[in-house]
Image 1 (cartoon, rainbow, N blue to C red):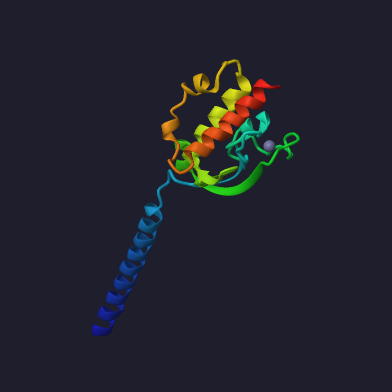
Image 2: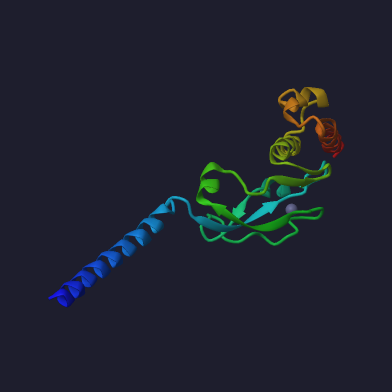
Length: 171
Ligand SMILES: [Zn+2]
């Protein structure tokens, strides 16, 4: 009778343990946030300088990959003078949603600059290429918040912009 009781108890215990194990594994899997997935992509990064071509400025920051609208990056160089590079990256879906990039620095004539400085410099250079009708550089620059540039690169960034402005005027 005791043996039978022990056998029955063991079966119950094993069943309980097996169930518990299944629960632990299930809860472990649930811990992974289902909304954050990793996405493989290729990001185009241009070299920012006063003479960076228009198609490179326009292509900067564009992402390519299976989950993106654009599947494959274009053949480089974009045009003569192109110094663009593509980098293979792993984004979280959060990065994609927020528009942030895992790349925190940007190559430029001023060395590696922050993504924030790079964006402002790129916008200035693009505006110069697309609309160089302003008569003076200082008038042109009034539309930009140049104080947003990091202090250590501000004057160099502005001088790159000025070189681009003069080059566009003399075209
Ligand atoms: Zn390019």
